[in-house]
Length: 431
Image (cartoon, helix red, strand yellow):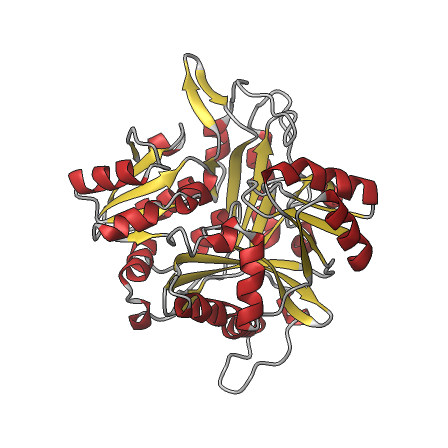
């Protein structure tokens, strides 16, 4: 197939690497891409957020499938334009993408579908935020209603900090003040063709900047998959479903979260075709949804796809074409996957960019390791960092101890002045 992947981050690089690993020998194109992606796909000069431009390019170059990586093109309606011209596209239309683009929309859909989630109050003014903080109590959870690149949320005991966060986002639209939910967090992806869903394998990511979950929220500093501890939090499977803890968990979330949401969106005339990302929390009262995203998560994609045994292209095309009903649940290897993010100095508040990178070949030479580029560009003397999150060091091993050792050995080979990374990714499961 001729496949066009829209996006420029490590998530898109991970998708491209998975597509390139298939025996079918696809022609893979990327827009706008980055320096690392350019080594694994043909870069095309194209505004990924322009529906007309993407559609014209796909038509003119006989693209068989368009895969939309980030959220911005979805909210811009790129998928709608492609579908209107009969081009298979993996990614929801603008209306369904509100599941990520508007936290309030997502809460309404969950309530209508009977999906378990925390209480939330929508506030339009600082006075309404104050009242909601008092009503729901501490710890305070304050979220920007719209897109904020994974950094629009604060969780804090400090009321003043919660108010300051709300005040900084109120000029852009409403704020959601939510009930604090306690427990381990899990990310679970679902492929959807608008009527049917197929789950992928669970992962856990690390949002805080520093070890021990210290520091500010980020777009994600690392992740691992699978989750061997799920059995401690999952009730016995219902009749006819798997007794394996991970499969039982996936069955439960499929039944109680993904399928009701997809049905509800379809009933409202906004079918969801693409990747439904469920951000979940395992509370003492059961599994609840923290948030939905309308695309592959970053950095969880980087640890889920290397374990996928089915051809990714076939799954994405089946979803885009409405044929998931004919496919069985995707299979995954028993291997452990870990990714650690290397970020620029000053990330996330004020990343220092333009610094040179070194040692990437040595890092890639470590057994079981590959690099997914997030923000890199070619310069006269080699690669430089162009953003906050620069690289994902991805390692696969027979167990988590081996995968972690490989990831951190590779990371030690990489030079980036002022670079920062967490040292505790997947430490819990490697003991």
